[in-house]
Image 1 (cartoon, rainbow, N blue to C red):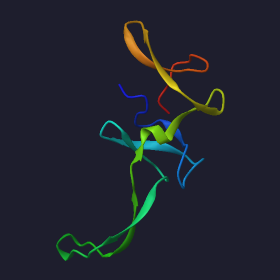
Image 2 (image 1 turned 30 degrees about the vertical axis):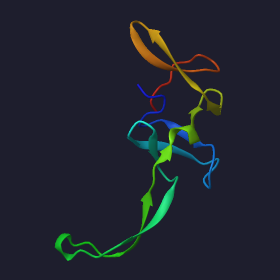
Image 3 (image 1 turned 180 degrees about the vertical axis):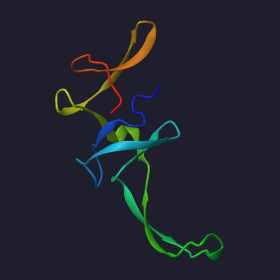
Image 4 (image 1 turned 90 degrees about the horizontal axis):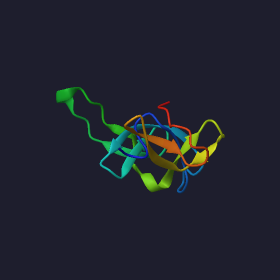
Length: 105
């Protein structure tokens, strides 16, 4: 179980998008996540008539390392660290500041 998962609301801590909020769209490997609207890069794409693709410059979401994002706690309105706890025989994620269970957004 990862501390940051798909559907979590996160805040970027470092880089050009510092302070931006976004929802995690997918997890790339164990250490990277793709956040909606954050880490957008321009990419040149060649035209491909076989699949009816027009060439040009397109926006591409780039992965961000999980150490550069933090989970947003809606209860406190701030970013928070995440820990794990066993509740009713299941391992769940909790916020370190208030001990509440993390719910998917």
